Length: 238
Image (cartoon, rainbow, N blue to C red; front, side, top):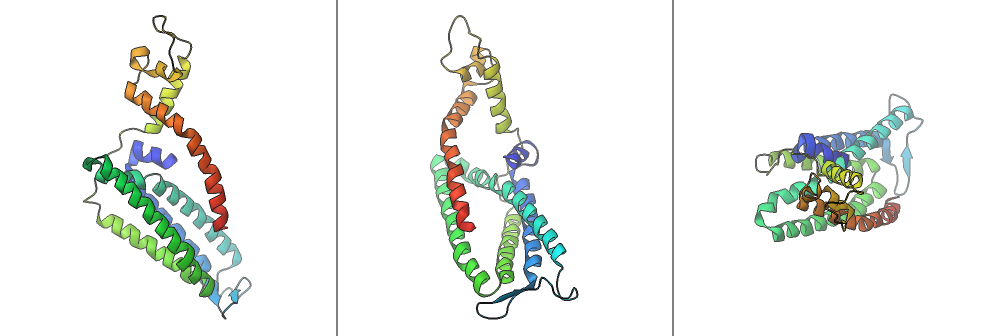
């Protein structure tokens, strides 16, 4: 949500995705550095040099610092990418009509699930049977390659300039409707409290803007159910 607001208000979606991708890459390579001492010694035994000679490995304190900072960078990078990559992709085909946008989202989520399948099978297999270091190297190189490919196509993208945040407008509509909730226009009792934000009822927003917010609020119960879904899904990763 925060990076969606940053993209809409200041940086634009392309710049936000690119910047957060670099942050994500740095965080991933910090994790690779931490995993560098994880070496496979036999088929089922891994030795982590937590008490080795300082000349031969990274000290535990440095590992913890790198690991923590890397996770923070990955979290920030992920937030910026996920908040903008799907609408940025939809922008590329928006001129081709609603059906093209729908096809884009269908393929987009198909490839997300294919990527997750590869990560939970192939990469995990490498980490468990070769070394965590090799597994993280695969991830780091994949992300680095993705950033390079994204950068190479910069002159071909439809990059909309920042034009104000929809989130800010939504909050303004809700706030104005709540402030005017006790008003009645020419003795007419409004059917919905959100109508009080419409221009024709003394508000500052068009009918289409208010109706979009109304549709969003109707979807909130569905979005709230996502919390339960992602909570259960995250247990698989743990």
